[in-house]
Image (cartoon, rainbow, N blue to C red; front, side):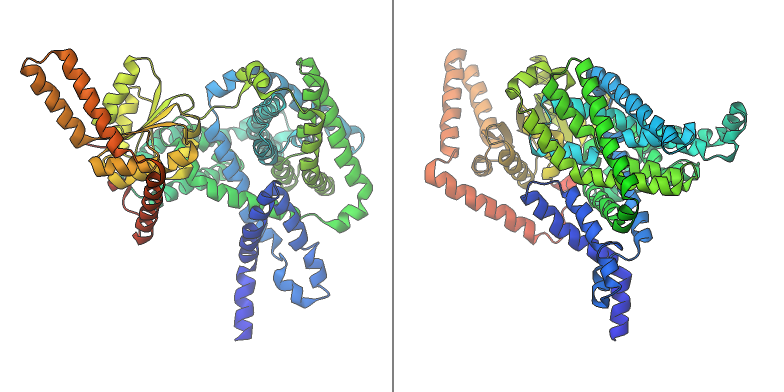
Length: 621
């Protein structure tokens, strides 16, 4: 029995250790206001074969808590970068690039080429590499950490400051460069690349043709596939389809001779302009977060303390030289692009260490035989050490550049801002059937921009083809509302027919933005009262509004002057509003009771109801 238990623990040890680490590290480091990625790196180093694993050689009892199958973990962890590349492709747009073109294609390209060139020169003269491997290593080390820098800036509310936007622009360009670099590795790994250039290119044409076929197939099939899945009104099927696209595109890309990440990146680009973009982001985000966490655990576990000590001189030279060279070059580039000294210094410190893509680029280059294994391993160790000190560098940059007022940065660097959320500054209409469409038409007539959401795939496709800015998704999910950008919206209009769905959407939106105008469609007076309790600014009961309109028509037909009729109708509407709106202690008690009712309703549902019955378009209503 003991042997069987030990066997089962050994089979699932890595998975259980990682899940336990994620459950402890992420909340702990979030509470400490430190990037969880640093925690994953530390946990990997502690649990890896060069940490606890080495102690387990002397004390067998510790072996159960050490990561043993590092190669198996690394294979699964690679999907973290695959999912990250997919999300990067999903978030890109031509408008975004155009708005930030000065820093993206100016500062960003300059940073990659100058830093890559300087590091490549060091590889040639110091390590004795050939021109092509040195250029590849230099480009890989020129990358910075999107996965750490962006969360650090967001947590410290510096993403909208001058240095944050400059760093974001450079990171965006670096993300764009990953795909060409992966292609370059595949090209250099071909045995015929040393022959004449034309012959080598011809030998690589089948792979290019396969990639072109993947792109064409994606453009033709992806949107119809998601329309078909969305029409089934099943979250499980939608999740399965999203995972199938990412992994399928990655496998197809790998079969063509490229990396899996390149195929996932292309799949993200193809889905970026579809109405399913935000729902896919919400669906994939947990998988990306967990797999990326596993990736950093595997990176930390690969930190060989013995090798660091044995090759201390070379590892430190690479690590310190990398940080010093990139800091100097980025600072000088920032000054050339007319940044203030303090802004340029903070930007340089944020971008100084290497990034997560260096691992996949250097690892792929080693596997392809393009880079020597020893030098590549030392380079990855140097990048790992740089990731450990990145939070400290970010704090140093913030100390150097306390900055002006945020409003000054907003005014001066507004054109360099990261892509705003879809709903920023617009009215959000949830439910775009007859009622929602009429509201949208009136908003357009008055020049007020809006974005619509519905969970009817057929309706969304029809309206989108007519030019309506509409997306498919489930607004009863808090994550979807956040991705949509409700926190920056001008107002929210809820027209869904299902009462419970309307209440949940109003509750979530009010919790996120208590000051936002929320206008909701109510079934009757009682439903309107519940909506007011949950935070609606105005709740319009269908029965009362229909009665008022009938009364207005009758009075006009009887010859009462129109002005008096309109005034009396408005007066009566205000009376009803005052009756329906709770005040004072009663409002607080009702809000507590309403929240309790909604929570109890959720608990009673053993299985979520089909979205078409909870949050869909109002249909004939």
